[in-house]
Length: 197
Ligand SMILES: [Zn+2]
Image (tube, rainbow, N blue to C red; front, side, top):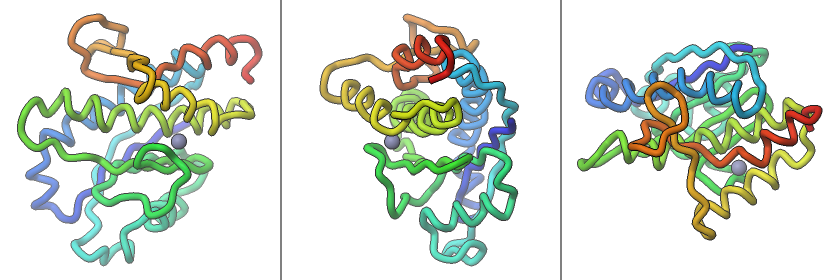
């Protein structure tokens, strides 16, 4: 299956100004192909693109969850589209600023403001993407509690000190400085390995 990440910005000026973020998001996209295989036994090809939406949403209308869903439908619902958005999802059941549906994911991409940009994006954005990907790949694997169990783990990250999984630039686990951080998928790995759900 194709997992197609789409990084959005209002216009080309904004896109150019966010080169560091686009570069990180492109590397992160490639990382998630490996993570999806390792954690969810999913065989994914990854593509990464940028998209400008217009300042007032001229291309997509009002910029919200529906805008991204409409773009997903226009591109073809057979591919898994994942939007890294400069606007927030307007409705979601998620406990992060993201949204998921069949073959669809989106997160509000938080912009680093000074400091260690890569560390900020790993902590805020990469983790949220992993949250939404976990929902969808568990759903595809026929795992019944694909919403609740991800939210249970997510709560433990924020309220019980559970560490995120840490990965280096080579996509393997690291105890050193991580390039990528994800939700702890250990509880899903075991169950999917025992007959996918
Ligand atoms: Zn969620």
